[in-house]
Image 1 (cartoon, rainbow, N blue to C red):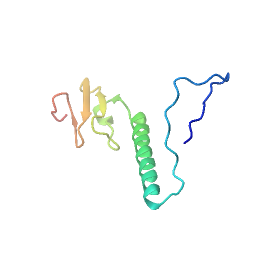
Image 2: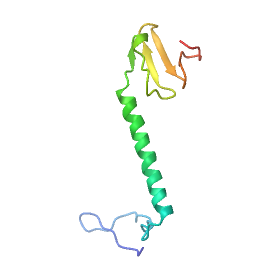
Image 3: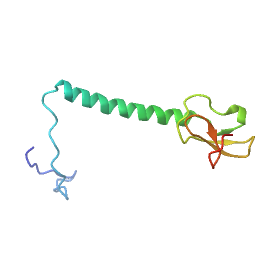
Length: 100
């Protein structure tokens, strides 16, 4: 990439000079396409997990605890028990790891 004098909106040189960025690939072989698809897959999986976490209730009765799409470490304030519980990957536990 040629060193180009990058300017601000008013025509003065941009300081500090931005780093030289790598050129985008000009050929897309199978390996490049696979890397791009893997990055996109990871991004959308993370986005999906975030959206599911937003839609999950954060508090309620013991009988209202989420039954699907729990994430390890997910917090839920159990109003029946009167304290928070966390999903450990297989069951809801209290602060010291006891199943509740």
